[in-house]
Each structure stands twice: as C-alpha cells, then as structure tokens.
Amino acid sequence: MILRLNFMFPPFLFLGVTKLPTACCMVAGKTGNGSLFEVSVVFAHPETVEDCHFLAAKCPDCFKPAKNKQSVFTRMAVMKALNKIKEEDFLKQFPCPPNSPKATCTVLEIECAHGAVFVAGRYNKYSRNLPQTPWIIDGERKLESSVEELISDHLLTVFKAESFNFSSSGREDVDVRTLGNGRPFAIELVNPHRVHFTSQEIKELQQKINNSSNKIQVRDLQLVTREAIGHMKEGEEEKTKTYSALIWTNKVIQKKDIEFLNDIKDLKIDQKTPLRVLHRRPLAVRARVIHSMESHYVDEHHFRLYLKTQAGTYIKEFVHGDFGRTKPNIGSLMNVTADILELDVESVDVDWPPALDD
Ligand SMILES: *[C@@H]1O[C@H](CO)[C@@H](O)[C@H](O)[C@H]1NC(C)=O
Ligand SMILES: *[C@@H]1O[C@H](CO)[C@@H](O)[C@H](O)[C@H]1NC(C)=O
Ligand SMILES: *[C@@H]1O[C@H](CO)[C@@H](O)[C@H](O)[C@H]1NC(C)=O
Ligand SMILES: *[C@@H]1O[C@H](CO)[C@@H](O)[C@H](O)[C@H]1NC(C)=O
Ligand SMILES: *[C@@H]1O[C@H](CO)[C@@H](O)[C@H](O)[C@H]1NC(C)=O
Image 1 (tube, protein in one colour):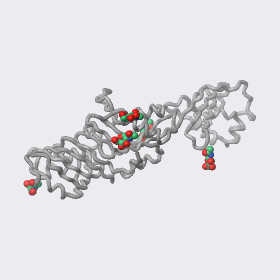
Image 2: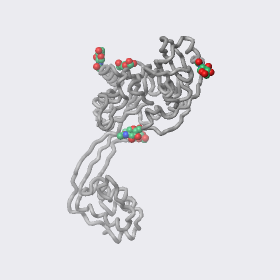
Image 3: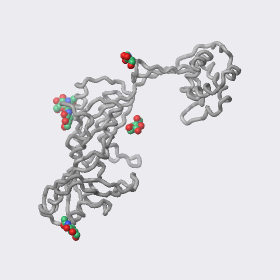
Image 4: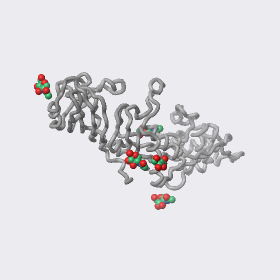
C-alpha cells in the first residue's frame, strides 16, 4: 500500500493535508533515535492539493468534519480511504503514472519544538496565607501568589519553556503549613528551549528558588522521566501523613484529660464529605484510619496533637467533627466542643523523588 502511495502520487500530497488545506505536504522529521527534538516543515503545493478529493466519493465515512480541523482531508482519513479503495477502482480514478507537477512546492513554515521535560522535588510551605495553586474565584484573584508559581516561575525562565503543569502528592489548605521533609511535587515543562543541566546547575536553581521567597523552600530538585512521576501518585491511599494540630476546647482540661488519646491505635473513623469541600467533591462517606496520636498539654483550653493518619484523612473535620459528619472525632472522644486553630503537615511519607545529598 505504501509502495503504491509512493509510486502513484507525489508523496507530499498526502502528508500535507493535515496541517493546512492549501498546503499539500508536510514532512515531520525526528532527529536521532527517540530524540525529543522535533522539526516540522510545512510545504505548500496548491496545484495538487485537490488530487485526493475523489476519495471522498469512494469512502464518505472516512471523511468526517471534526472540530479544530480545517479540512476533512487529514492524513489519517486519506490513509484510511486508500486502504479501503480497490486497486482497480483507484486506477480508474487516477492516472498512472501521475501527471508531473508544473510547479515545485514552497516551504510555508518551519517549526522546532522540544518534547516536555520533567523536574521533581519536595517543597516546604511556611505561610498560612498561601494557596498551592492560584486561587481564582469568578475570574478574580484572591491571593497574590501560590506555591506552584513561586517554584515554576524560576523553572520556566531557566528552561526557557512555554508553559508548565504542576502536580504533587496531595495538597494542603491555604492556612496549613508543610514542614519536615516537605511534599513531593513534579513539574512538566512544555517545549523547553534548554534541557541540559549539570547537577550543580540544578542545585543553584534550587538555591535561587530558596532565596527568592521566605514562604517556600525546595529540596531534592532533580530532572526525572515522565514515567517516574507515576511513583508520586501510586499507592497514595495507603500512604501515611503526620500532622501537628493546635486544638482549643470549650471545657477546662487537665493534662490527664488528654492522655487517653496516646493509647488509641488505628482508630477507624467515617468521614462524610466535609461541608467546606461539598461544592467540588461528591457526597460520600469515606472510612479512614488514625494510626496514632500524641497529645501535648498547653493550657486549660489548648493542647497540641500529633497525628499519624492514612493519607486523605480530613484532619480539621476529625478535630471539630464537622457537625457530626466525621465520627468519632476529637470532640466526641473527649466529650467537649473542640476546634482546630492551627494545622501543620509534618511529613508526607512518599519516598519519591529520591533524596539528594546537599
Ligand atoms: C539508536 O538506537 C539503536 C538501537 O536502539 C542504538 O544502538 C543506537 O546507539 C542509537 N543511536 C543513537 C544516536 O542514539
Ligand atoms: C497536566 O498533567 C495532568 C496530570 O498529569 C494531565 O492530565 C494533563 O493533560 C496535563 N496538561 C498538560 C497541558 O500537559
Ligand atoms: C533549600 O531549602 C531546603 C529547605 O530548607 C534545604 O533543605 C535545601 O538544602 C536548600 N537548598 C539549597 C540549594 O539551598
Ligand atoms: C542565595 O543566598 C545566599 C545567602 O544570602 C547567597 O550566598 C547566594 O549567593 C544566593 N544564591 C543564589 C543562587 O541566589
Ligand atoms: C464521655 O461521655 C460518655 C457518656 O456520657 C462516657 O461514657 C465517657 O467515658 C466520657 N468520656 C470522657 C473522655 O470523658
């Protein structure tokens, strides 16, 4: 089939139609083996652009209009029709050998693009006033920055990339800090213009990010493969997280009133979707496990609670109960009304990306 294609038609005829209806050929070349650098050249040859149109009558099903396609004569559609048409029908429709073109084709555009590269690391967030991703409601920006931007802006500049795509192992609320070794994240850099960096250069980049803001810090910054990013998401439900919460109680408490919490192990709780996220999450009851707790008395109305929980547990709701939607909760366990004043993520137990020596 390919042979016939090459013989019967100037090959450029079929290759072009994908890109521009007026162009009759496009040659996309890849340099080297599996190189991510791609050069595409678009040629125009108006004289032969309609040569393949007869195929539409032979195979109407092959040529269906599609959104964002300027012409139905796409490369795929033409190939499909060519596979269907019988040799003799084809020869009836088209001269063999084909007429020689009168004009040569012209180059319309040359485009160079580089496949995405990926950078991963862990971030700490030290602010209680910083969202992870831009916080925009009804087109209006609520807070001026975000973790995502504080990191990615530097990467975009250094990799000279067109855009980015940020992902992470879970996320924290605007008012929650992420301490300890930080939270794993990965950033896809789309169409980078620079991709080779020494580990020293990556370390300097990390230093630059660290220096640029006291709201976030980054560690273990490294180049990774697209495939490796899967490690960040895999088994997310089974992973554990540790938190530290500052809790207020309405009733006066003594040290002995909170000691029983230390003895509770693998407490099963049921959480109805919290009221505060109901607008974006379906209503469901999720079973979660609080693996262990450690209480530290502060004063008659306050204590600090360290919790090790299954990932995906809503900690704020486990403390105040969310109007009975999380059961049991700290309030119900202690027979008090409890509220959470501050929350910090102390660790996200995902061992990817690999830790680097400083
Ligand atoms: C291309 O791939 C072949 C087979 O995988 C390999 O032997 C060769 O070294 C590669 N060439 C380059 C330039 O990467
Ligand atoms: C960004 O990443 C998500 C998840 O990995 C993916 O579904 C999405 O297609 C990506 N977007 C772009 C523009 O690459
Ligand atoms: C950036 O900050 C993190 C967290 O404080 C630290 O672990 C890391 O070593 C710093 N990196 C550089 C290059 O300064
Ligand atoms: C970061 O700040 C330190 C200390 O102020 C300084 O020595 C270093 O040169 C800065 N590095 C970068 C890359 O900005
Ligand atoms: C809470 O109250 C229940 C029933 O009134 C009682 O059984 C339980 O021991 C109390 N728990 C605490 C920690 O005071």
